[in-house]
Length: 179
Image (cartoon, rainbow, N blue to C red):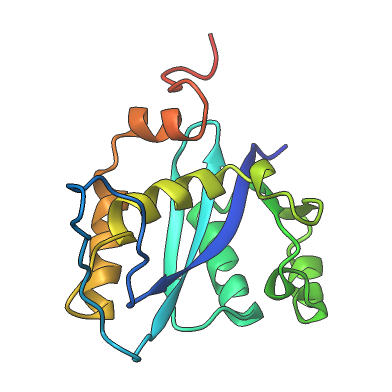
């Protein structure tokens, strides 16, 4: 019998043009955030958040299609070949396309999908991580290039303390799974 892991999967966009968010400033002053102008290239950030330990896999791609979903899930499968993965995901078209049917069938002994109801991002724990990452790394920040933004986000994931991460997703830090 294979050990099983529950993973919350989703993707988000990393746009070079920064998001403007609320901030505290002196009355009459306005926060100025640089921008690349009309140029707004982007990357797709895919993430798989393992519950309840808070570890994860994050990949950056130039597009957000079924090929990138499959590539991300293959990396997940290869990371622990003797694990059965239960993947919770929303119904985005790249996640549910019939073009992935053969991939799901071929890996049915190691991978299963749980679809979330439409319009229910609150049920996908990785959405909380995206929100905090955007607030700390993207809102009101301009990076010299899209590559610099992607590198900063990767660095953020690598240095986020597991206790802080577990707090963000609403679970207690797991130090011991079995007594």
